[in-house]
Image (cartoon, rainbow, N blue to C red; front, top):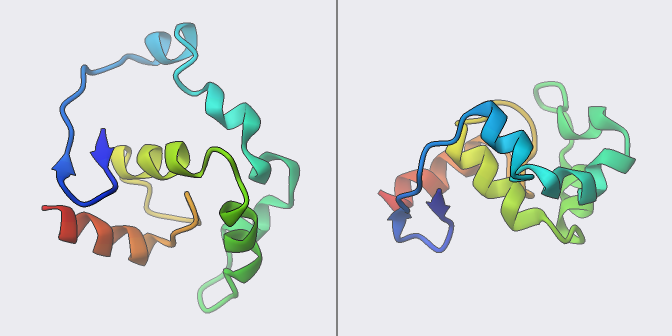
Length: 96
């Protein structure tokens, strides 16, 4: 798990896919506002606008969980937790 406040990675147990599904660890995705909007806004073409996706993220109750998921799983594409892949890389560098 990542500490998005910049103190580096947190230690946490490893979870299998079965654990994730059984324990509802990914249940936050059901409450994500992006699940109710056009997914293409979250995966813009190179040079495309990220403004709409970030606007949705900024008002989403699970933004923190989403960002932590993206950092833990090294998501390379799309807007996650209100940050682009480039912004997530910067955040990870600062946390190390």
